[in-house]
Length: 272
Image 1 (cartoon, rainbow, N blue to C red):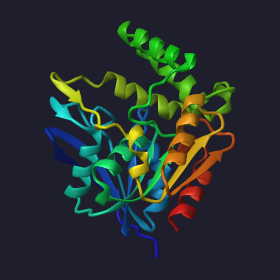
Image 2 (cartoon, rainbow, N blue to C red; image 1 turned 60 degrees about the horizontal axis):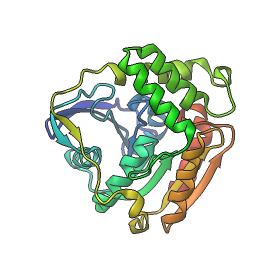
Image 3 (cartoon, rainbow, N blue to C red; image 1 turned 90 degrees about the horizontal axis):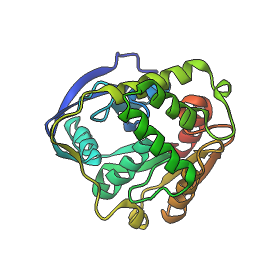
Image 4 (tube, helix red, strand yellow; image 1 turned 120 degrees about the horizontal axis):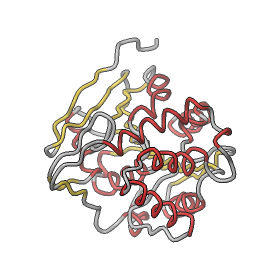
């Protein structure tokens, strides 16, 4: 019988920050980690769907959505580990998208006991150096726009890069999806910084330790995603011993929002 109880929302005090979270449904825990151009709202469709059979946990990482920046040093993967422990979760299946995929990989390496299975959606990768002209130009343009306080321009740049993708224009994506990602990205740009805040990286970085991951892993990437993210996805799938690789035809970077049914089918088949 489907679970009909309302989601539980709250703030978890973690390393000086207040991390917003939502828990929906009952069953085996499933942690959803959002992309760097988004926040926990990118998982709205999945949280509603999977709460019928799983205990779905999603959060806004610090500096995103409803989680403010906080002073002090921290790691995103340790934040996720502490969130799970604060919710009484001993082990969970973990889904991470883009930057959230890098966090999921780091979580798996730093706290392997907390991760049962891993789904990586167009993941970033700790220690990977972007080298193509397209990526270098993107970061240079984004930095210049933000330095000039042109938030609108920086948001639109990110929409073209990640939502529209390669070989498509803005009309290829439903306008409500584009608007939702733009709203989430804008909020991340304008949240006030905290003095003395410093995000630390996992050392050694994940790129040198992929072979240490033994958890069953699904890696997926869209055919309209940026070339280096397609490269990263293949690299990760090749170096994790128990990994499966899927290309999602017709999708760019935000697969779960652009093709929610296809995304859900792939994840459900993998976690069955």
